[in-house]
Length: 616
Image (tube, rainbow, N blue to C red):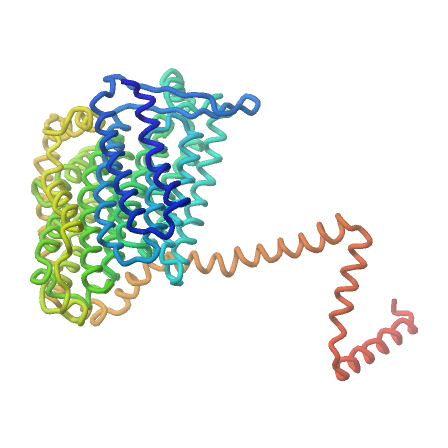
């Protein structure tokens, strides 16, 4: 079988779907939606076919696109164990999210634009997964950024969505600037951007990997995977439709940053890895506190995404990228499930998202509630769920290799159970607290089917020993070493207790504080300053707002004045420019007020008298 042709078909299928929708189906939302879903189904089928026929050894091929001097930009594919896993995650989870969207967006007037955006996103994400060089990765990296901007801004007639899309776009461009500089440095240092050649060069001469280069390259990761200090865009991105939150901000796009780290791991020096480990562990812990200050069900899940991405980053930072990919995969199952469940609830409750206006959902939406519970216990790492195997492996490795990192991760596990227990006890138990919730009913079959499939995987998807070898190659050796190796035996036995205590204690604390179906946030009532700290996201967003408004904007104003006066006025136009600027200034003095002219007359007399006295 021609692997190149198969990968090309995987790539162009969503592009073809987006093109047909844009050209012919803008006002035919139903047809556009089914075309996009069909395209995602074809992608899944072709991806499985590719995986079944993938060679045992890494496979790469490329063609020259264009050359500028010594720089050659190629379009190529790289198939290895990392590609296999993420290709499956993107195509499999993406298909079920597409199918769910049929029901969720059934009454949306801009349905065609939404599904066209989904298709162009799938094209962009698949490009990152299959790319064999940094230039191609960056091209599709930016296309993913554009897709994210377009989909977050789907409800562009609301101020919240408009501001959130701009924030996501700008923050990611900050990270991408560092990423681009790192790519340029990489070409200058290695003479190529091909990942295989760079990997071989560093293996032959490890000194080629320098800290500055690694720090610049991981800027892309900090932006896409929403890690400190570029994490502020992700919670606001919940202003987009809920399926977008599931596809982009839980299962695929944010995973691209972790995938990048694995792709360039040979370029990450010990200092860079330590930075990644500490920032990831810190985010895993701190995001839980901020989640306690949110009432929007999607924003609570958004902060849980930040926390889980922290676990993945910590795994890469302590030198076990396979475990990061393992948790990326299980996280895609249960976090996509949780977002789709929240979408089912929001759709049934007439777009109500405040958990304190919900209550009693378990009785009115039992299937959605049970699916949410399955995703919740997997997210908490409850024993033998999908999240347990991947999260426990990361914490076990951290306990054995880096004690301080471990304590942040175990703290994050407690916080995860605490804020998810808060969400569940308030929204799903007790009595309804709004008319929309009181009259809600279970979603239709087309929305429930993805919940059932992902719900099963959230519970059993962590049993990696039963996975096909083609999917588990990238992490199975590290997972087996952690769970069965002598070096980790003591840590594993300890974590059996610590991990269980962590999620159970978090639930107990949540129940003690919030009870069942409470009407108001008890932390807000009893400790307002602490709640305000959580609610305002530790004031990190306020620091950014102050910087932009008080420092950056004033600096820009100064540059604008210098551009107008020195460059446009003096350097370009010369004396004519000076005369023009004097004319503009003089004309501004003619205000049409006799009182003003009297003041100018008096000033003229004073200046004339000073001149007559010989003062100047």
